[in-house]
Length: 172
Figure (cartoon, rainbow, N blue to C red):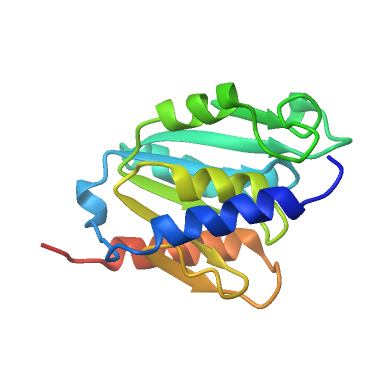
């Protein structure tokens, strides 16, 4: 990838379309399927909470961004996006990758990627799920439920807190 300028431009365009509607919520007990997006380097921090979700009878799908230099052996994922091979020269995911991600139907999308993982931000913005949750590192504001963080801290703790707040929602 040469630069992140073009993918950030696509994210800005998607934000304008995605954020114009009202925020939605869904009680956690009504959530049947969850799509979790995260970076491969954070797999160890995410694994425990994914196991908890599985025990709660939620169908969990994962979409993982494999950073340059990491091997796919260490991470289990329903969809693996490789920095080398699945992104074009400008850092934009191929249509095939986009279609594969959109095919994972979910009631809830949880985006746990860091502030510089533009590919997963782009995919989360364009995913057609009902309810989106994640971690805001700046003035993103595109999630229906978000935790604000000033820097990428303990992802395991942040994921746990996000799940706590999701379980607390009582919506009609």
